[in-house]
Each structure stands twice: as structure tokens, then as C-alpha cells.
Length: 422
Length: 120
Image (tube, rainbow over all chains, first blue to last red; front, side, top):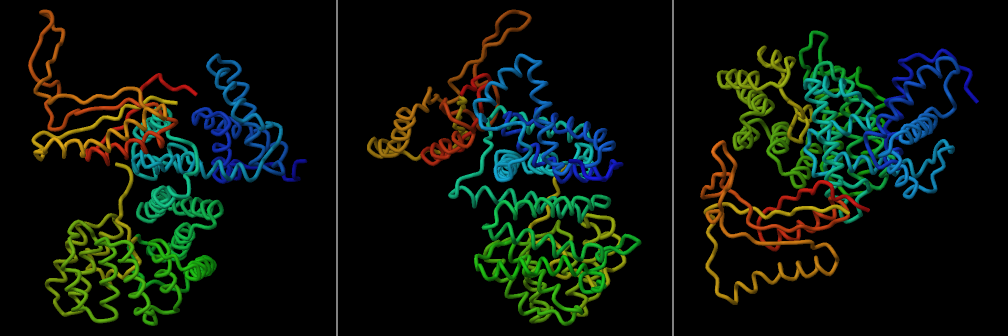
């Protein structure tokens, strides 16, 4: 029975599309074994929904309605084509138990989404292709939206998606959840893709919607894989970073460093949710890079003012992080914590050992440490280098002004910033 | 099932350590075992090892007829040293065979599907 809410507007359907299309596409790929057929059918079902729901109001289960309608549409269309009839024969054999009249089967549909995530993030695909496919198929973004988010021309992005889907089909990249023994290796690119989407949202002006897309994907993963501590860590990390996102940028577009942010504007609900997940991770005691970064962010979020920050605890967490993720970027962030606990001179000696000449936070950190040591001329030089390597206009302006109160840890992702696209 | 080409790539100028016949036999044993396993599981379709690229000859049609020239087609530092053609369930299956071949030969393997060979 339709709910008593006629006049469903397109914005509402757009939200439902983002929330539900991934599930429907995943279910239809299982039924038809073909990504394009699934995508087209789900698009068509939403086009029908726009007209129908405007008159009748929302059905009780919009997602189930979309999946059922898309399935019926796809079958109708395939019956009209000869190649389609072969495909239908196969689909009937592999999915004999599926009754298109049943609106939604919860658990198999969840498995479908998980399968699709692992297909999209298969290591045989480039990172750019993984990100684009995940946002398109699971995130429900249009090709135009994906292209715009990564500052890539739309035809180039369309081409990238076509190529990736062709490879999946030609090389037979499987549609399945990896076995337990493969999972640690195969989960890694899945987490990296979601985090990359999040950091792209942070770094790209006008692409903030990517942050909520990433959190939505992280929530889905956490529901589908409740026993994977790193999945929980990823969700907590994105939630805790998101809590501060709005305080990072002034209305004029310049950057506000962690120590100078107005903590009253931080989103307490997101912090509470993130910290609760971090506490569960600590109890589980199977630390990994995402959980540790989340824990560091949880400590930052814990105090009402920056000078109450528990730096020794943050340093201890960075020590652990450096063991599991021994990258120069982690070493840089750890050095910042060393600067707070043991002083700027010790930190600068560590920073100067690092080979990160193209990385803006490296110069920003050096500048800050040099200034604290009273070496103003060298500090000014380091700020100029920071401005030159800044990835966004907001950061460039900030460092050109001499970066008052420059970089503090956890303001930057500790995983090397690789922007997909371009 | 899909057919895949697993090609073994060698880089020019790689010095092969000189081996006694016994060392050679020992070095090839893992590969021989692997090929045996490919055959017993119905994976193996064909395989071969190639002579060095300086033994290659290129034939092409031009305005003046067929032209035959000495040397490999592509002047590159790495070239095809040998290959397997296998039948596998999907890419993961093919990749797991490829990772065992690369472990046995110590060289990178390119995995590429044949077109028009998908069958269930």
C-alpha cells in the first residue's frame, strides 16, 4: 500500500537513488551476469519511479520496488533481443530460485553488494578505475558527477568506466566475496578506495558530497563485514574527520589548522559515534592503520581546547602506526607529535631525515618547527616551499600568508595523498 | 571457462648464471611439477619456450610485395620468452596459476584473456 505522501519531489527521489541504486544494481548483476544490463535497467526503473511516485506517493519499500521493476524491465528488454534470450536462459539456470515477484530478499541482497564491492575494487583494475566504478555502481553517482568530483572531463571519465567494465567482462573478473585466506589482501584496496573518495572530498573544492558518499560506503561495509576491525576503523576515521570538516575552512576559503579550530563547531554526534567505534576496536585489540588513525583522531576530539591535548598518548599511537604502516608520511606526523612531547629541535632532526620534497605538509611542518626554534629566515623559506606544493588554493593562500600556527598532525591523511583522476 | 595467455617476460641483457646440468634440472623441476598439475586439472592447453628474439624474422606486406627482415618486430628491452595457454574459471583462478608460474620462473607474468573463448 502506498504511503500517504503524494507529491514526491525529484530531490527526494535523487536521495533514494543514491541510497538504493547500489543494492539494486548489485542484485541485478547477480541475476543477469552483466553490469550494463543491470545499470540500464535500474536507470529505467528510476525514470518510471519519478513519474509514478509523483502521483501515487512512495511505496512502502522503495528499494525493493526499484529492484523488482528493474528486473521486470530487463527481462522484457532481453526477450526482444536474440542475444538477450540466450542471456536469460543462463540467468534462469543460475538463479532458478529467484522469483521476480518477491520484492526484496535481505540477506542475499547484502551479499550481492559485498560481491560488487570486491569486483569494483579488484586488484586487476587501476586505482582510478576502482574509484570510478565504486562511485558509479555502488554510490549511485552519475558519470557526470564522478567526472566533476575528480576534475576529469566527462568523456574521459565515461571512457574510463567503459574500459573498466570491458575488462571485467573480457578477463572474467569474478563477482564473488573473496575466501577468508584472500580477504586481508583483497580488503585493502576496498578500504583504500573509500578513504580516497573521502580525502578527495576534503581536498577538492565543491566536491564535499564525496565525503558523505564515502561515509555512506563505509557504513555499508561496516554493516556487511561487522567482524573486520579495519572496516570499523575506516568508518570511525571518516566520522571523526567529518566532525571537524566544516571548521577546517574559513568563509573566505582559507585553512584553519587543528589547533586553531573552534571546537564548539565540531559535530558532537559524529564524534560520539566515532569514539564509540574506536573503543570497540581497542577492546578487540587487532590494531591496523585505519583503527590507529581513528584512535589518534579520537584523542584530538577528546578535549575542549587544543592545549589540553594528550600528546604522549598520540605519540604512542603514532609509534604503533609507524610499525604497521612504515611510510614517510606517517613518520612526518609522528615527528609532529614528538615536537609536542619532546620539543621542536628533536622533531626537526627527524623531519629533515625524510624524503618528502613534493609533499606540502612536509614543508609546512618544517616551517612551523623552524619558527618555534627562532630560525625565522629558514621558516619563511619553508613556507614558500609549502605554498608552492600546496594541493588546494585554500592551503596555498594559507602558506603564502606565512601559515600562522602551521601543520598539526591528523589534519592530513597519513596515507599518502593520491588523487585519482587526471 | 575462459582461455588465458600467461606470457613470461624476459629483459634483454639479464645475465643467466651458468649452471651444471644437475642444477638446471633442479631449477626446472618446480616448473615441470606445475605443468604436470596444470595438465592433470585440465587447465593446461598449450605452452612453449621461445629462442632469443635475435632469432626472429619479420614478414610484412608492402607496396612492392612481401618484405622479409631480420630481428624482432618491436625494438624493446623486454620480450616474450615463453607462454602458457590455460583454461580457467575466472580471472582469480588464472591469477593464482600465474602467481605459481612467476614463483617458479622468477619473472613477471602477463595474464590476458583470449577473445571469444568464454564458455560455461
